[in-house]
Image (cartoon, rainbow, N blue to C red):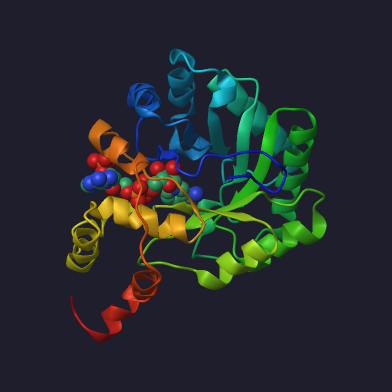
Length: 272
Ligand SMILES: NC(=O)c1ccc[n+]([C@@H]2O[C@H](COP(=O)([O-])OP(=O)(O)OC[C@H]3O[C@@H](n4cnc5c(N)ncnc54)[C@H](OP(=O)(O)O)[C@@H]3O)[C@@H](O)[C@H]2O)c1
């Protein structure tokens, strides 16, 4: 896919949350071996160093890898953000990051606990991120877990438009209004937890649709997000599962897409 600043980005990337720093080097190497070229990490995952080692240990050119990381959510000031970007580059031992995101509009500790959306703090993050783009430290910048009001704050007051909003999207969670709003601004949606964190892979209804298309439940869930136009970030540390997720060569028909979008409503109607 091509982001709104012209930077190209793979549509299927490997998520690395909950893969620890010691194991992630090997996982990244294995993923590169089966064809992944793009990795999603964050300061708060504690594994940036290992992800960097995995990239270094591969014989793939740096320019053929697409690396995303995210600022620590506790940092909401300009100087702290500048420092966080340089620290991330040090941990990766790389000269640039492909995509840098504000991980959350609120520090984790405040999520679902306060109404403070940190509009000023997010603009401080953004100012330092814009400078990092100009300095060649970062190729594209974006946000994550941002609601419409948070996105509007950046679009109205920043000079660079966010390239992506990384949010939770899967068959059980389709925030269509937010997705359409971002789309109308040219902001690409990245779907995190596309497999609902593994929770739905044994769901009978999902398995029914997967059987219909002769694919695995994971492939069905990824195809669903891809057909909504999302970039997907499935996590796996298992080679067979990694391979399977790169091969989404079927299409869910329009009627089934509609039914799958409405599937979450079943909980209010019928037990499955
Ligand atoms: N921006 C944010 O705030 C945010 C939040 C959450 C996630 N993310 C990103 O999105 C990525 C993915 O999200 P996620 O880690 O929550 O979950 P996910 O990709 O939705 O699901 C991962 C889980 O599904 C299991 N799984 C994967 N493929 C499978 C298969 N074919 N069969 C059976 N089980 C399978 C995995 O098991 P194994 O571990 O055993 O392979 C793991 O437990 C993260 O790694 C991270 O990069 C971002």
